[in-house]
Length: 128
Image 1 (cartoon, rainbow, N blue to C red):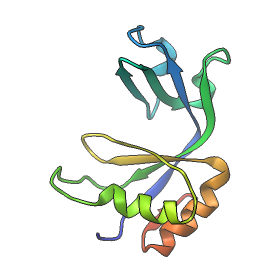
Image 2 (spheres, one colour):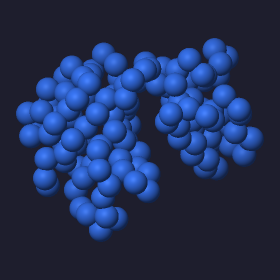
Image 3 (cartoon, rainbow, N blue to C red):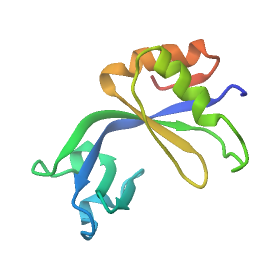
């Protein structure tokens, strides 16, 4: 896998959970980045921490990284080239993909360790 360019996105991020089959609340929309995934088990929302109401079940304090560039859907190993060094450093991740590129989140307390592991694997990591 080639070297990847990663950019930490500003801010603090949260992963919120709502029951399944509920309308997506307005606070989930309109941010620079957001993700809504609905399954029969529930609705997961990733958005800025400040947007999530205190009463909503959530895991707060995540840092968001964007993989620069787009990848053909046939390209193999993009996330593996990131997940393997992070796993080796003991850094848990939450990964997601869009049509254009990939993103992953790490806890803010793990940003320095994540950046060191990624740089050690040959990736460029800006903003961390």
